[in-house]
Image 1 (tube, rainbow, N blue to C red):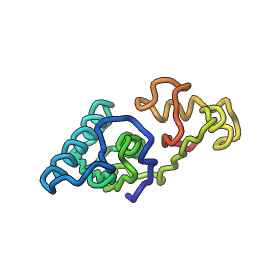
Image 2 (image 1 turned 60 degrees about the vertical axis):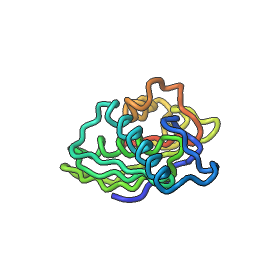
Image 3 (image 1 turned 135 degrees about the vertical axis):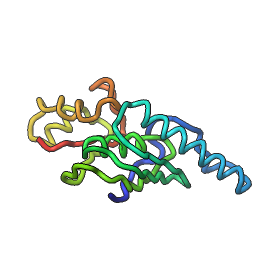
Image 4 (image 1 turned 90 degrees about the vertical axis):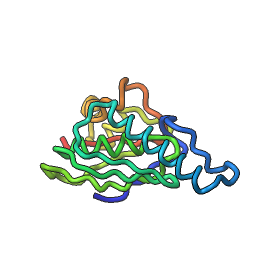
Length: 157
């Protein structure tokens, strides 16, 4: 459990975040936050991740996720699915894990990174890039398609 930071301008466009829009009524802001939370919930659900009693809320760039998941891998993927969304700068992880494990390790992609380069820096061998690719499926569909600002899960070897 904890607060994880993401880059608000990077990520998948699931909803139109309007931080620079003129003031909207409190009712409209609540409605927009609910639309954003539902879009993030739908994204997590579409990935086929394992969870129970999952609840997602969104307010001013922060996503809060509650519920439970069977293992650390699903927990980490849910955090990444919620955080790698344009308009999200923090994920407050309140998930419980049925089989707890070590805390997650994440890496933020910078310009010029490749999975091979990241594997070399994290594991000492560029040839271990498939480990990172597999650990980030189904969010990653192609090992050559990562972008600056994206957060990736770095599993232990």
